[in-house]
Length: 449
Image (cartoon, rainbow, N blue to C red; front, top):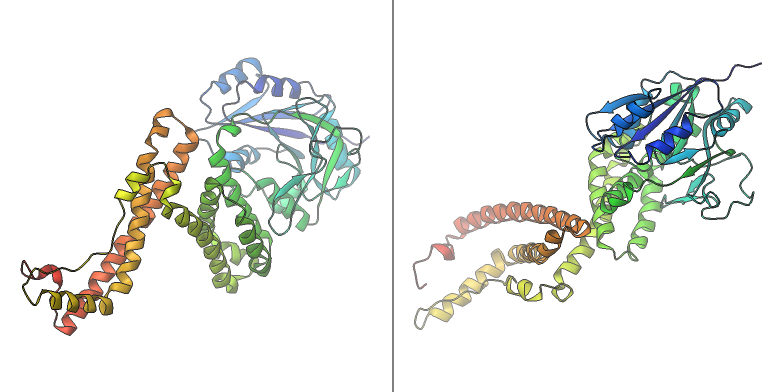
């Protein structure tokens, strides 16, 4: 009789003290002969580690000194695992006694099976949450098969899938040896399991859904508290996934037009802010991403695509910021409006001539450039007004509004940097032009001129 493969179950935890008793109690009562449990704690502040050491001494604990996110946190434990099969498990999952036995049976049925996921039910134990998953093309949005359907046996066949959720992800030693661990670029969470399944399949392994292995997934309530963080992580890693797994041509010709079209229907400011930030973060790593695929020559085109997408988000934001009737602090913002300077002179008789000459000189030398700076200054002023207008939200401790205001503060910083840079360039150009024409700058004229 073939010996049962050794298994190590890695549970990632962050402030999940209330979840751990149910999760670990179920894991310590599995009807499988040869397995270990490893808990990786991401710097919890709720005494999670003390609870585990007191109530579950058989569970090995690794205490990270900081919250490393999902992929980095899991990899800390995975690097120490030596078993034939590694199972990644969320701390909000409660498994059935035969869950692990059924999961491992899938590996034993076919040596080419490298990644296995299970049937996950919602807390009622009757409604399907996960029976395998797939991505839409080209936008790379995730969908779970039979999601929210009552479990009536419609998802009871083992089958190949695009990917399986990271809430429960079993990986063979052969896959680990060939493709390594989770890609830590997908940080802090989202798309790391999708990336891993795609890499495994590209390496020649099957990714399957095993319906006889069943667990309840309660969905960690601590994750629900960070809507803005989740949006930022989701879009950053969705873009990273498409850049990594699509060809450059697919990204430019298929993904970009579809994403721009989708944005026309998105009027939620936090999502657009998150996507704009995601474009910028992926630009930083773009040369390495393309080099890994041997598509370095596509860098200018892909970079232009990301900048176009980022500009679409910024254009929408600027349009809404400029419409001051949309904001509660209308009077404040109106008072902060920035107007183009007007030339004046109190010299008798020749005053109008001086003003006309200055206006003509300005139109030729600098008005085309100064007007752009005025527009930037107006956006900056309105961002300031928005922040001031939103202080009451900070006092109330509204986390949603606080996140938006913080992101707008970053917008202010970016606008300020651009304005300062452009002003420096303008001063240099004006000085050169004035020297060439033998003109005296208006601010240096004698009083009354």
